[in-house]
Amino acid sequence: MKGKVFRLSVLSAIVVGVMAYFGFLKEGNHIEVKARYRQYACSANNIDMNVISVSDTAYSYLLGKDISPEAVFKQTKLTDWVVSKASFYQSGKGVSLPDFILIGYVREPGPIPHCTGAVCFKVERIKHQNESQFTEF
Figure: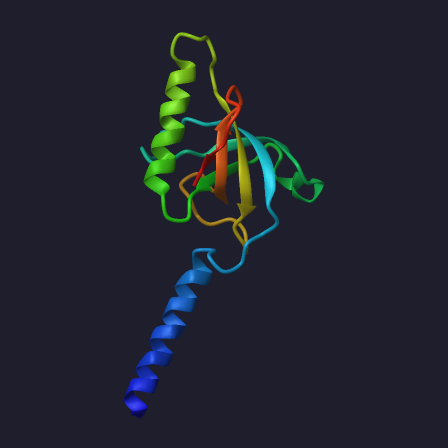
């Protein structure tokens, strides 16, 4: 009996640790961010964006900095969505870098090491500035 309780305790601690590390337990304040997609060459999965405006002045430190948008479970879908929108709005329309509006939160405790050093931003909803409806993630 003691062995089962010990294993269950260890497993619970591991699950809570993993969830805390990936930002599933502690959400920051939800904010709206307008950001410009950056096409960095460090990774095919990189969808970093440069922050243009924030809805909450407490997050004004993000202005001019890069964020790395991440979905909790649908990262591949988010990456594909951003790249396809960016390609669509850049092709034949003369737009150099597309702007997006994201709703979500900065992952606590803050920046995580990406190839560009961008701050992790957990995305709940996103849209291109020319669209009227958000896509949920």
